[in-house]
Image (cartoon, rainbow over all chains, first blue to last red):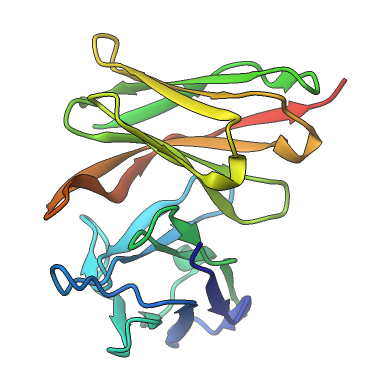
Length: 115
Length: 125
């Protein structure tokens, strides 16, 4: 199975600053069939179930703020979630998940906290 | 508004079978995938597999032959069974609905769009 590795595991951020979370996959998530990258990002707020933020590398889910964006390096193995102007409501654990190859696998999670 | 709700026993004896049902309201399971994800205490997320509305399924090989899923479109529900459970299966179990997309090989599961609130299952005697 594909191993997903996130860094950092803990991310203290000052309100108003930007934050970046990295996710690396053990093999490419770039589909040779259609050229899409099957990498999604989820946020699990305290006491809640995960919620979809970004799908297929860079597409924001419905209702997700444009302060959140997803990108990739082009290699198909390195990905970044960026949050600008961090707010208290952004606190939680962020997970990347690949679905390019089954079984789907998640990163370990990055806990974002407010300084 | 789409809602998913897990139901089932919160306590299961070791070596017995864990059975959970996910009820979908405010939307249909037809043409969608039902999927299950679990979260062990203090750990991350583990994807267990999916059941398509037409009955096609895929299970995480890590669970070997212990897992099975089923769907009842007439009730707008899908279910999970995990046999021969041990303490390692203690977790919060989430059901979720995933979209589908078309590929050269046919229909496959796309992104997980909506999750239930999760149900805590403890395996203990």
